[in-house]
Length: 56
Image (cartoon, rainbow, N blue to C red; front, side, top):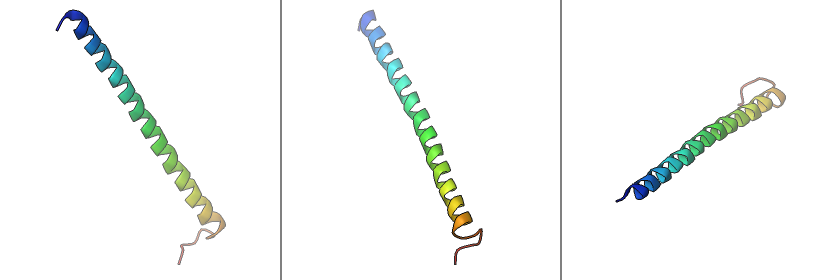
């Protein structure tokens, strides 16, 4: 393998790592957002429907 091919392989590996890192960051943010959404829905139901009481 010549130097140009090695440089291209390294470039592709670096790009793949950037993509993977970005997807990992996005998935963490989305997961956190969904968790917050469901917590807020539950808090709203608890307050407005259950009057801060436990469900039967």
